[in-house]
Length: 215
Image (cartoon, rainbow, N blue to C red; front, side):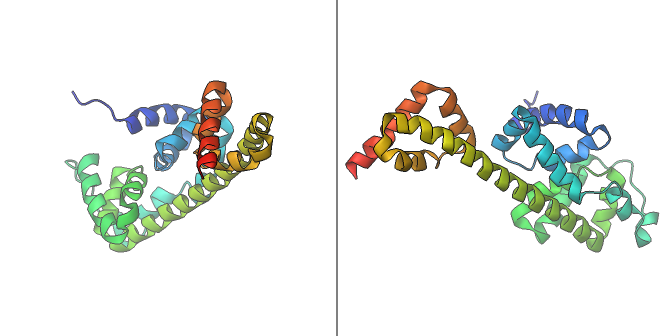
């Protein structure tokens, strides 16, 4: 028996939340969002507003006709889908072709395109031109999601930085800005944890002060 991966478990939880907000396109949107890091997916699961923002970024680029557009283009209408084809087999073939076009993002792009129905994927494998179109669309989605994620993280850090500065200034007012800057090198999830665990925050502040004393 194969145990589910962390991404699989997160994907199940994420799908259930996305489904409540966008039931008709839950699978497609979830597939795109799963291209994010596990840390960001956890953030989506914990913060409904952050999840909505990420979903909005995906929906701005995706359109309900994305799957059917490819099927209805040119000679692809006549392409049959072999009954013996499985998603896994299609995925392997798709990954190879996507890697030839964009090796850096191959895994994410393949996962996104695999959210399409099997007939569409089969057609894409037969048409380099339409595969390129699908990849370009997926790249646009990634770009929007990455921009939204970066903007959100910057905003989160700004808010967290103000809270941290207040707490640090109560202990070390003369070096509060420097210590806060050092702590802000941590990721958002770790910073949120610091603000909820006083002992951990005190430990990190002390470490930063020791580093400054040694410099």
